[in-house]
Amino acid sequence: MNWQTHEILNQFDELADYNLYTTDAALAQGVQRAGAGWFAPSLESYGAGIGSSESFRMAEEANRHLPELEAFDRRGRRIDQVKYHPSWHALMARFREAGLVSLAFADRRAGRWAAAAAGFYLHSQVEAGTMCPASMTQACIPLLQKEPALWSQLGEKLYACGYDARDVPAAQKGSLWIGMGMTEKQGGSDVRSNTTTATPVGAAGRGQAYRLRGHKWFLSAPMCDAHLVVARSPAGYSCFYVPRWCPDGTKNSVQIQRLKDKLGNRSNASSEVEFLDAWGVLMGEEGHGIRTIIEMATYTRLSCVIASAAIARQCLVQSLAYARQRRAFGRVLVEQPLMRAVLADLALESEAATALMLRLAQAFEGAQAPEQRAWMRIMTPAAKFWVCKRAIEVCGEAMEVFGGNGYVEDSRLARLYREAPVNSIWEGSGNVMCLDVLRALSREPASAHALLDELERHSGGEQHVRAELQALRRDMDLPPEELEALGRSFVQRLVVVAQACLLCASAPGAVAEGFVASRLGGRWGQVVGAIDPRQVALGALLERSFPDAAAGARA
Ligand SMILES: Cc1cc2nc3c(=O)[nH]c(=O)nc-3n(C[C@H](O)[C@H](O)[C@H](O)COP(=O)(O)OP(=O)(O)OC[C@H]3O[C@@H](n4cnc5c(N)ncnc54)[C@H](O)[C@@H]3O)c2cc1C
Image 1: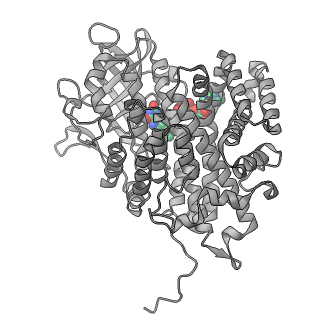
Image 2 (image 1 turned 90 degrees about the vertical axis):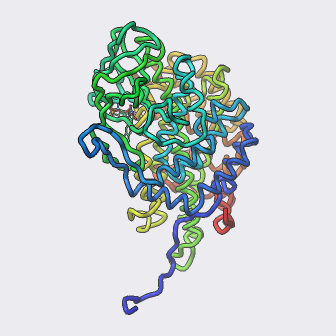
Image 3 (image 1 turned 135 degrees about the horizontal axis):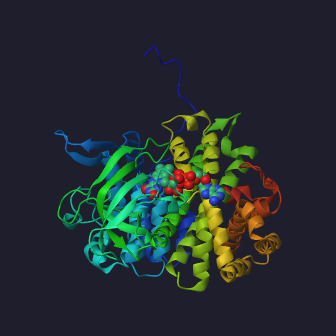
């Protein structure tokens, strides 16, 4: 072997074969606090399976062997099928079979939303593309529940835990996936710019059949059994259930033009489609479709927060595991003071994101109560803005912890880095989320004050937190134009102070104090790691984040 010029030293693979649940104290404690302890054994088992090297391998395969469009069969008949790698199907099946798609709705136990969020968070750390159809399917459930005729046909199959990938009419399937279609070429944020039309086949109205004509510029997971689609009907923008197959057994005339060549989220197909008088059923009142589809988007926005918190967590764990092994200048990286500051800052960001996503998920469970409604209405877009943005930053920094090894395409960090921005773009981009927060504040000022009151109660009287809460209250009284221009700054501060309060209420002192001192104490820099280590208990924080012994402990 004369090419062997050297021994390979100081090189370490990314971490695998560890239990993503039992090694995550913040998550496991949060699940208990949320009353979801009954689901902990399932999460423990899911955490072991999804953390296996086999799962990581499948995730890599599903993202390397990309979905392919087969628009026609061999004889030129349209089939509009997308073919996926077997690993995609295996990962979809794993999530479905754990009951995680419908858990938040199918189970009535307290804590179900936190339980579902925790499952979503575990899976997203390993493979995020599969979470797109999972999130959309979950989110369509409450909308379809309001349509008795459709629900009687679909409800059982939406709750079903078997995986059925066959491209056959819904009536023949054991379980279903459903996506959403809003975005058109001329605009996605402004759904009122949609030009796709819907014409009643016979009588107009809820539950009636319409023909849709037009396009969608982004339609993810096109192999879903149906999509909920916004189109303009005679009474205005309306929401339609558009299945892949018509009730008469013919394929619906939804043609896939091509698949997007995306930066990340590559295991999941996103398509451009044409509706050539496609068959659909009106959901909700005609002319109220935007309100209907926005309800669905509220759920998928929560998914974006969870997925981004998951990215931050996976970045942190991989960085810590690597830094504990890799040596430079005679010491392991984790012992280098400046690297410790970077890792501690990542740990604070990750734990704050995890606490926020669990609290937010709980709000979805009790949405009838005013304080929960305030959380859901105001903090969902706020958290979607901030946590998704932070995940992008965290990925870049985690990649750098790996040095050059992080930047090569087959690195797990590179995939996380390419994945992160999509959560900030889809389901309402950053500015749109900030504007949504401001809209909620102006429409429901009492809710906003109630939310700040609740945060204050959790602050434990911490002076920086109280000062920030007071400043936010003052800003809420600014003229709307002025507040709009301040939108990003206001929402960032709202989320950070909410995270501080959540951590003050329940996290160990090292975490809560470190977060408050770094984020609100005036010394937080523009890059990860620009903290004052004298204010942060670095060792305790890193040990809590991912115990040193956990890397060696098999799942
Ligand atoms: C991988 C991927 C998959 C997707 N899958 C789907 C799908 O399945 N179904 C679907 O319907 N859509 C899907 N989308 C589309 C996505 O939801 C839209 O891209 C997104 O909503 C933004 O719309 P747009 O691209 O038209 O940008 P625009 O609406 O043109 O917005 C451009 C920018 O302007 C900002 N902006 C807009 N309005 C304002 C304002 N008033 N003030 C300040 N700033 C503003 C936005 O925040 C954004 O940064 C997908 C997108 C991606 C990337």
